[in-house]
Length: 441
Image (cartoon, rainbow, N blue to C red):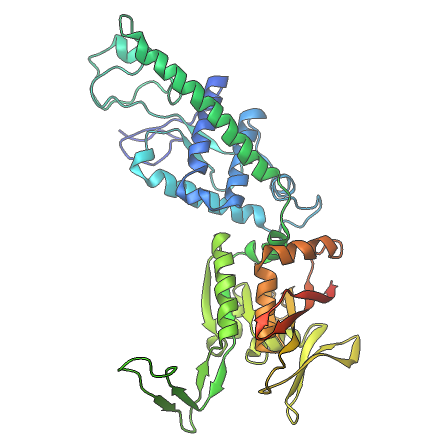
């Protein structure tokens, strides 16, 4: 059977005509299907996709089938200001692309082929619906038409009555019908609850975490995670205490031609936390050392830069901004500089000097559109390794960013932003970071 114009191409032998639900029963069937889709694996972990698909489906069912505008979706679903720049902040387009991908994943499963199909065609935010095909697999009638015409060939597509609405032929036992009706009522109330829950997700104000990361998450492309590296001419691969009979010391010497890049534990912790955060937002990322990262890489992708003095790209970025780093090679001192108060040294740390039992670790958190690459960048850079660890904790713990959002300057959500933080270090343990200074432009 060839497909009709406007049909969905899920299976070549099944033709589905586009359908506009016209009755309350039909609209209820669509809402049932929406609840099933949103509870499925592809959607269940993405609040952004749940919010967008819920909104556009409900709008299509309730507002004379008019296509919503991108700006309207940005304002009503993602709480953007009324005059936000849709080119600079493509959150709606990005989320719609994710919705289309997840719908394709859902309906690719053969178990869902006989359900109502919901699609979001490219180039529009108006969903399309395709009725559930009622396929007679056993020869038993499932619709009034089938009951009156029992000789139809098995596998033929029948009337497109909504999912779950079956008629009972005369003379049949009424108890199955009564049970079906009771089950349908239960499903109806479950669908209402699910729809209201999803509507609540769509209308809930964004969290501080969401607002901080949104410019990077909504930027198109895979996030380039660039981690700082230290270089040493010799590495002693010496296990701690030779705990087993295979343990031994394995020294590596690079000679004069080459140095080994090494990743420190603090940067590794930050990398793991940020990677987990991006994963929960369905944002793809790739991980690279600063030595293998090029300007072309950063010019073609949004990026997260981890580290400071061990990451050339973090230093190059901060050199263009108000808060940046400085050091005195003779004394080993490292600190943060404020261009508006250049005589002050913020968070002085002496490299390779034992840290006191109680001290403060300082860091700069930058979320900016890089003036050189024109890409969105988040840089997490400490004066020391502990400072970088504190920066990573600040941007990956919801409580810290929620507290920051309450006190942040107006319109910080979409602005270029630098935050200087300090965190107490007590006996090697990191305490809660506090904001020392904030600058946005």
